[in-house]
Image (cartoon, rainbow, N blue to C red; front, side):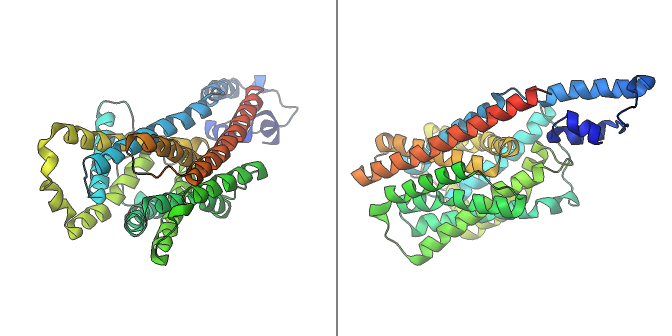
Length: 360
């Protein structure tokens, strides 16, 4: 197998093994075995399909950034413009819409995934618990902190992703990217410095939210490395296992009943906004899973931070709920600089890897 290892990158070793190609000595003639030649040709064709273009990784990042920005602005309009107060109910409908789209697209034969199995569900327990914990504690943190403080706390998720990547996935990022992350997180604190007042319980809930969010993205990457599960399998199990805890939350809180009594259901523009927000969750989840699978949880987290910076700037003019102080604008510029520097170093890494792969 050492001969084949020297020919092909490590990322394609699983493809070699699965194709059934036997390891031969260096002096062995493959022409003596027609079946082996056919397998080699099959592997070559498969390898050409597996290697993405050098801009594929960049496209995935942009896709996640755009979808995340759009749904954030739509959610912002739902909660701020229409004053819809039940965030847990919106999460519930987003999960329901995601499950519906999965089965609908499979019925159209656009996608394919395994049927739900309780035997396989054990592999997704940590992922689903992380997702539920992220949702529940974010609701508590948002209630105990003001919006600037809440935003500053959540942007520290990237640092926790950095740590959990090393612990769970044994990935250590380059020093240049680590410095960019520190700059970005520091800028978020500077931007919220004038509003850093609240309770220690609020700070604690915010940091717990960061922990579950980082755990969620890291375990998406870990499960995606399992050849038994494809991207849409992960989406199905995560949504189904998360459905019941969120449903119980909305029932026990009474918010589900209050939602049906909400006065704006007769307004068609609110209904369109609510449905649009629920449906976009499928696109967002797909982009998160795809970005994490192609790159890393850290890259997904950084793009999320960059998206937050964009939505903050849009919010300055669209929603008028942020104070435009010099310190706030300075912090935004520092955080933006860190995010752009990280994006630059990451892009260079993607392009260099693509050039290496194109030689084989």
